Length: 261
Image 1 (cartoon, rainbow, N blue to C red):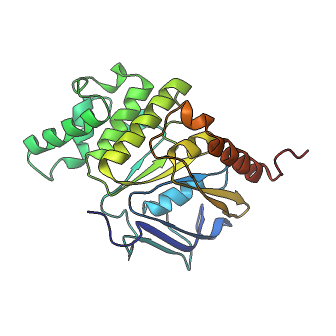
Image 2 (image 1 turned 90 degrees about the vertical axis):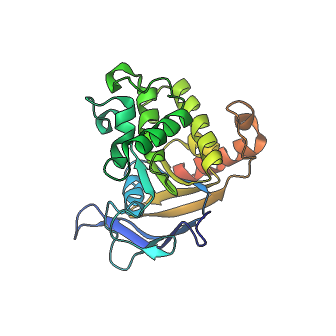
Image 3 (image 1 turned 180 degrees about the vertical axis):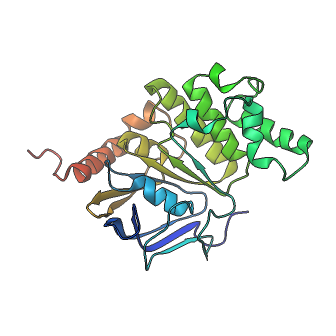
């Protein structure tokens, strides 16, 4: 059962890299509904990752900010909100097998047999059910990122916060994992907030896109992705609605009209 209120609610949200320094972004207002896939899109330095960390309770919001998950304010990571980072290699423990990496967050919370059952179910969701006894060094980059996603899924999250998780992967692996993520989200119904600087990735994955721009940054535009939720790397990207949205976002990010000089 989903939360009765917005998954995330942000009002007048600001943040700085350090206390007392200039704001990276300010006046941020948006909601994320339960089960929605929302991307935070923007160029370097607009605070996408910092905003994601604020949502995850890993970075303090500025004075006067109101950030809530399931209707409750928080100052630490909310229960059942899990982050997935871009640097998958640094997040996996090289001396632990795939299964034991995935079980890490469950240790001490339930019997070993239940931990294993949940870990195997999560690994099956990401297509690694046959790789449980491998070590990270034996896996490709895409497979290592799947392990990190499985480690998030095993916690049974209501919301997944993803910081450019596919940014370091080659194009084919990225496309495969994008489709896997959409399948997992449909299966679980979880909320996803996804940081990217890739406008094609944002359109392909999202229900809505928040474009961040400016200094300090704000929400320059909020766009609904009017495409069927069953998406395909070829047909979706050839849809006229996809192409129009791509043009619109490109113009916003580059501060010019489409076709302008």
